[in-house]
Every structure is written in structure tokens, then in C-alpha cells.
Amino acid sequence: MKVDQLSIFLENRAGRLAEVTRLLSEAGVNIRALSLADTSDFGILRLIVSDFETAKATLKENGFTVGRTSVVAVEVVDQPGGLHEILSMLQEDGINVEYMYAFVTQNGDRAVLIFRFDRTDQGIELLQKNGINVIGGDKLYDL
Amino acid sequence: MIFDVKYETLPREDMERLQLKRLQALCERVYANVPFYKKKFDERGLKPSDIRTLADVRLLPFTEKQDLRNHYPFGMFAVNRDQIVRIHSSSGTTGKATVVGYTKRDLKTWGQLMARSFVAAGATPKDMIHNAYGYGLFTGGLGAHFGGEALGAAVVPVSGGATRRQVMLLKDFESDVICCTPSYALFLAESASEMGIDIRRLPLRIGIFGAEPWTEEMRRDIEAKLGIKAIDIYGLSEIMGPGVAIECEDAQDGLHIQEDHFLAETIDPDSGEVLPAGQEGELVFTTLTKEGIPLIRYRTRDLTRLNTTPCRCGRTTARMRRVTGRSDDMLIIRGVNVFPSQIESILIETEGLTPHYQLIIERQGNMDTLEVQVEVNESMFSDEIKNLQRVESKVTKNIKEFLGVTARVKLVEPKTIARSEGKAKRIIDKRNEA
Image 1 (cartoon, each protein chain N blue to C red):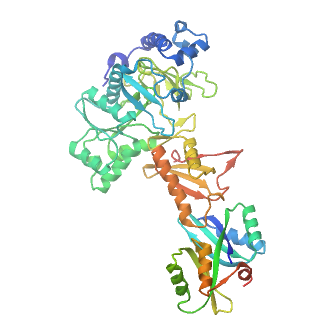
Image 2: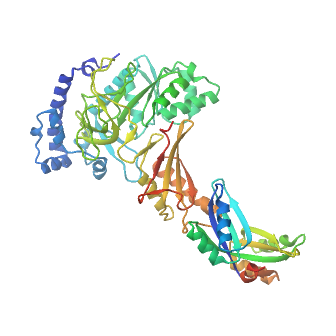
Image 3: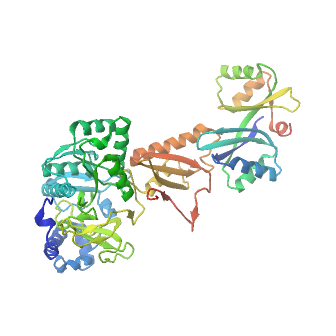
């Protein structure tokens, strides 16, 4: 039930992000979700894409440092308390969220949360045990 | 004023006669007492008695920094350990240290040469000398200290650091002379102005600056900001320490080499051929009088040119132009010697990084800054910022610990460091840019 996330090292200078989006666009890869973490010198771009392998190969060929990370995607009803309920469960079991980002689905009634846990397998197990809808890569890439 | 009129104004023929006599005695001494030199002489079929003229010095072998490292710690000493009364050592905590030892007479000589230097710079026995060179294994602090005392001046042994207190002491003690690195002088001026003290109004009138390369522009800057005369001093621990050569206040046109103690040559760094005076080359010294660790034709790697014409100050000693370049890749950053290879070893030792890197040295305000750019590769890459920052701070910490220099470590994308003809350009030194 894990999802492949592509991480890309970017120096903090003009045009670097555009270079990534240009390459992916030319390779016909669609970006499903995106998050950018940055410091004063560099940033890490995290992407969920429609075609992981093509995206990875394209960026590598063009000299980018890329990594693969297993993240967990969770679908919740888009209403107050949706995220809080999940974070409370995790807290009780002592599972740490390294980072997360979220987006709302196209029909607008559901939100997808992307989590990076310190203990990924235990995180998935806990969420499923509590009846939370953990969605796999196959579904997410075509959502 | 001239401290040692007899030797500092010796007619050149007399100086050369004295140098030859001392050189011959030196060769006898090292041949008898230093196995390293006996072997080198024997390999060349050379006997000390073969040195008949001063020009014969070119028959002698060179000594390199590596020779001192290979004989770490005391293998190059020419006297018994019980005759050594002081040890100094260059920086180089990654196994690159060079150790030198001084006899009682060596220390006396050194004191006299530093006293000559102070006087050449315009100091007198009545002066108070604020000595902000670091005390310890580094020769700067104690070298200047004993020189000031040999002159009969009063020395304030402040050493480095605690800048605000230094400003206070300069003001309260009314020191006349300051010794430190040129960049530290500017830092002191800045701190003084932050404290609301106009350092130009203090009695301070002379600064004696060395241990790092500096430029004419920096001299003008220091002289304007501190309201003093800025004098360039040269030395290196292998030869003696500070006071091997000094600029005179009268002409400020090259540094007078203490030729009765050090025989200077300039050579082509590639061929080793001796160059005529006036041509730029690598400076090579033979210590004519040193007892503890005499060195024959020591290659300093400093690039300069020699001028043997008489100086208007009255001294007849040869002068060397200020050193601004090196024939190897050593960098001097805030007075600390740094080889790019040392940075490379640290990167490799830090989490097995075998990356491309580049050193960028700049002068920001008045301080040298070192930026170490490291290309990120897949083995060190992480999708979590904290992991990458951990790498940065670990490298920073190791550089500080091993080299004593604070560096800014910056992770950069692969291939951002230019490759030229297969050999990466490791150093970008922007300090001498206008």
C-alpha cells in the first residue's frame, strides 16, 4: 500500500524548478501532487507523478540528483476534523510524521493526505486497523 | 633607525663573505649531525668542503616541507634533545604538522631579528606593543613577544580573540604598536567603532602585520581606518618564525631579508634552476646560523622576487617583494594554512562522501570567508531537509576541528562545479579581485 514519491535536490536559484517541470512536461509525465521544502541554499522537491520510472530516468539523465521514498497516501472526507482524527491515532501509537502534504480530489468531496512516517509499515497497519482508507499507488497515479 | 647597524648595513661583498663562511660551517654541521643531509650529500658525491663560493649553494639539495613531515617529530634536529629549549609546530592536525626546535642561541637570534624588525617598522624601546598574534605552537605570538622584550619595549601578551576586550586594552594601555594579522586589524577597527571608540584617535601609530597574504589596497584601508602605518612582516616556522624579513618604514618598498642569518634564492619552481635577482620565482632559504633545526635550501613555495639594490633607509640587505602567490595549492585563510587535499580528506571521512567540491575564498568586509561547495550525489541525498543539514553541519564541524577554520558548507547540484580538462578547478580565490 505504499506510494512511490520522487524527491529532487534543487539549488535555490532562479529557473531550477521550471527546468524540472519542462523536462516532465516534455516526457509526458503528469504531476499528481507536489511539495517543496526549502532552506536558504537548497530545496527538496517531492512529487507524486503519473509515471514514476519515466520521470526518474528523465531527471537523472539531465543531471538531477533524485531519490525514491515510500510514502503513505490516505483518503479522508473533506470536512473539519478529517486530518486531526488521523494525527491523533498516530500520536497514540508514537508514530512520527516526518513531513506531509495534501490535495483535494477533482470532484471536491475528498482530500488525499500524503505522509512520510518514521515507521512506514506500522503506520499503514495502524491506519488500516482503524478503518482509514489507505490508497495504493495504482489508484493514486490515475486519480 | 637601525637596530643592528653593523649587520644591517654591511657592504654586499662583506655580507657575501660572511654568508659563505657561515654556509661552509653549516654544511659541515649538517653533514656530521643530520643523517638526512649526510645521505643527500653522499648521493650527490658532495662533501662540505666542495662549497668554495657562495654560488656553490646550487650544488646543495633542496629541503621540502614533506622532508620535515617524514622525519616527524625530531628527525631533522641537528643537536641533542637536551639542547632544545623550545618547540614550535605549524598547523596541520591531519598529520601534516612540521615540528621545529630552538636552542638557547636560536631563541636569542630570533629575539634580535624581531627587535631589528620592530625598529625597522619604526618602533622604539619606549613603546608599548600590543601583541595579538596567537600564543602557543604557532610562532607568531611568542616570536613577537620575545622580540619586543629584546628591543626593551613593553609587551602586552593579549594573544587572539576577545576582540572587545582588546579594543579596551588598546585604549586603556595606550599601546603604540600592534602585531596581528592584517584582517584582524580591520576587525578590531570595526569592533571599536561598534563600541563607539574612534580607534584612529588612540596613540597607536604602527601595525606589524603578517601570517597571511594581503594587498596594497588592504594596506591603504588599514592605514585609513586605524590611523597608523601598516608594515608587512614575513616569516615561517621552518626558517625561524616572524622576523625573517621586514619592510622598513622609510621606503616600504619590499621586505629586508636578514641576510646574515638566512641565505635567500629564487628558483624556477618547475626546474629548480636559480633565477637572477629581479625575476619572479619560488623563495628558497638556507638557515646560516640556526642550531636546532638548520635547513638547506628550504622551498617555501612562496612566490616573490629579490631586489639587491640599496634601500634609501640605509640598509644594504636584499629585499623581497610582498608575497601574493604560492607555487603549490596551499591557501592561507585568516592566518591558517589550508590545503584543498585536507578538505577532501575531511569530506571523504564524513559519511564516506567522495564528492566533487570547490573552495571559494572571499574577503567579506574585512574577514576571509571560506565556502566549501559540495555536489550532492545519490548516496548522500535524502528527501528530508534535516538529513542534508546534518551532513552540512558535520562537515563544518570537522573542518573546524581538524583545520581550525570556520567554513560555510553549501550543498550544490551535481555538475555545477566546472570540470576543466578532466581536472576540477578546486579553488576560486576572489580575495585579490578589485
